[in-house]
Length: 245
Image (cartoon, rainbow, N blue to C red; front, side):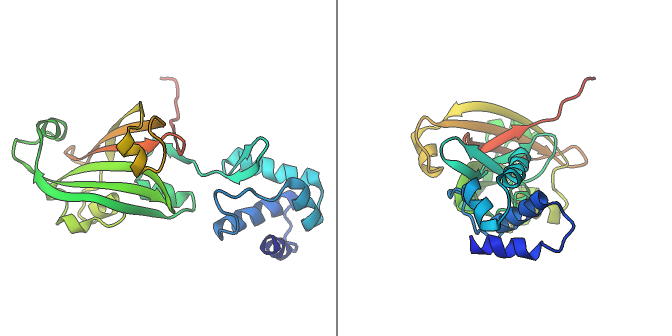
């Protein structure tokens, strides 16, 4: 709590309204990991007393951060950092980019890397001839230390120099070779996690999950990526902006 007080003191000379100073201080405290994702923020009454400001100001600041999606209220428990990740279906961004945009650190645990030839389904999706070479990358994707999804990606072999070319971000590796997808078709469906999926995602068998299939195309229209990901239903929100024709 003393760190939050120090951050607030550093903002006293700004012309921002007091509630905005508190919002900025809370954002900085969250970025510095002063509050952990599973730890409740101090109660509004305590914040008001420790910072010598009114509870109305504290409530207004927290209301704004809840509206932004940075905080979430849990009735009877308090205010917490929102650990859910929002994925905009209208933007073709990588998992790593989405996680970094939330101020968190992407990480991967590899399950398997292999090279081989296309399966009949992959050949159909990627529009490849039978026997065409591909790379396969299976891994668990994390935000900080929280497992978010299991990813099964198949990449046309000509799009990458080797299996070792992919580190954290697949799209960063593809961008280096000029094969980053610029367009994709995505399909989302609901599922219940089976025992293996639940174990890998550190959740429970039968919990809600989301399956997302993505077929990525480069600028000349060739498909280079076929990916199927299994997301934790309690950690991810998919949104899309709609408009009338």
